[in-house]
Length: 296
Ligand SMILES: *Cc1c(COP(=O)(O)O)cnc(C)c1O
Image (cartoon, rainbow, N blue to C red):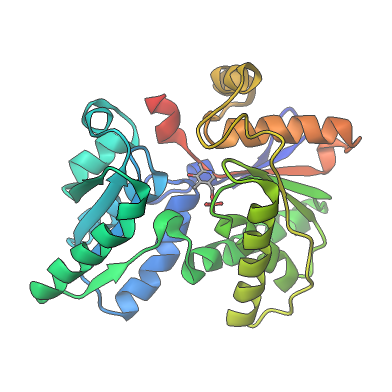
């Protein structure tokens, strides 16, 4: 669903994506599910932080389908068992939770969870953190169809599209989807954690891979990921971002969390101001994060 705020900037409301608790991780998981069913898998293994939207979507999916699920989490175990939001949903899902102290132990813990399932004669399925897979990207190639329908109905096309960029698969999928439909919107990712150079390389490579895999004529759009709004890194924010987040429901009618969407929204406002871009020509792709907003 796309709507306009104050009759200006258009918002793609993936925070209202109706399945698995919504957001871009809900949308990605539904696309990954197609492959899970094709492979006849019956157990899932993935990883993320204690407020991971991705782990929440995977946990809800497994619970709904009666599949076994192991979540390898990094972060504070104590916080995980006391916090609301995604942590609460993961706890209620019945998934097996394994904590690792250091990020470098994640791979090993996931591999061993896969082995344990195989020993129990299950057919486990491995999902990269963040749902950063071909199918996850495909979710966004397809989502651009919805944008295109809106554009045709309203005789309008955004000159610029902004979104929060993490693993980059949402951004890469959107770029490939725009090429597929021959739309020349400029995509600007606001990095939530990585420096521009690394983030842009990952987005560009994954965008090209998606085009090749799904046979889309790649137009080599520029993959822009700004790191001007990192505020130090993943999870960090400044007072302006905090203010936008706190006022979001009142000002816009949707929530913006400090980790992803308030950061991206703040970056967008600053960028369009500095580059004299008409807000009416802009689309903000709201990637979700309602549950981490509630846990903050
Ligand atoms: C994961 C996430 C993102 C980043 O998406 P990527 O596809 O990893 O770049 C943005 N917003 C929210 C709310 C997320 O949970």
